[in-house]
Length: 392
Image (cartoon, rainbow, N blue to C red; front, side, top):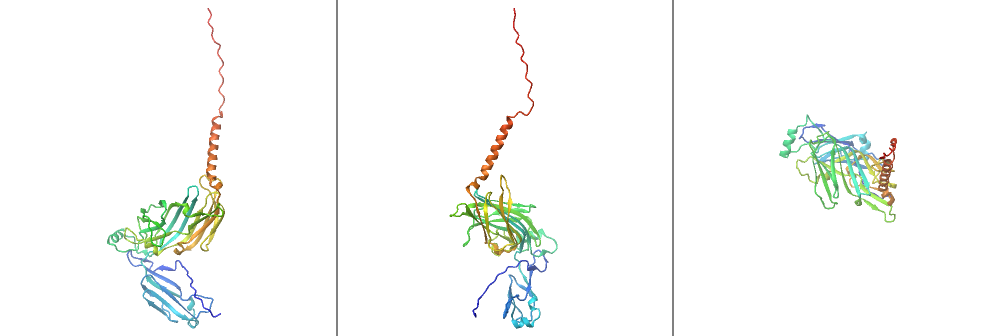
């Protein structure tokens, strides 16, 4: 009794900031509007509270509030309050009053409408294949009028800014190999992979750069998928106390960023913005055939997690696929990992080669048997002709 505690609670809200106006010129500043309640609803008696809104750009305007400390602006920050318990009681409906802040922000704002990340585990090849499907949308203001390719080309040569996303950056492990990109409509004109990078305090990585032939303007969508392979032993461990128990640790989501930069070489600071949120996310982990007693541990609660049967080439009994679905995934989930444990014996490792060998042996045995079978009618035997004898 009488003690105090300081408590910080972090929330991430998606789609609470909307472009205002909804359409601007191709090179005009992007305006945005944040709107929410003036006060935070609480089940506890609150003596004093305030709402502070910090924007990344210049403040254009905000809602005026007469109660309490009112609303004040300091550079890129707007403060509503502080409000005391008496202010809240005197101002009818203050807790339900919505306040707005309009500001300028020319940074990239994108949303993955759907994103599916798939892992394929192969013990036999010591390979972990990663496949990612994206349906991306630029959430910035739409272009007023029509897209002007000439204006975009002039801006590129004069280094003027515009509101077009030109490069998509995908961070992949340093050991990634066999990288590929597939675009449904053939919009990718240039793709490249950087050399291995070693930033201080981070594990080494490479960056896959995708530069579409036509950039992404506000409201435009872009759909593609890419993949790569990494050695499995960097993600899979064996329980030393139970040699058949395997522990697979993989990232929950990958790291990706978008850039409006006109430069051919995009700086890696673009990853610091973490400007891509996900509306509908699905994670699929395909385990090897013969894996049993599967357990999944997630870094946080999700909408659904389960298992599905699946079959691939030369499978005999099929394999299990761990499926995780989640709506509204914020970029803050980058760095979180999923741990999947399962039993996988040496006999299961040899199951597929033995099945393939058995099938080939059966095919050869069947072919050999068929080649010795007589399927037609037997040909009639010719009668022996008597031998002619000479007489003198």
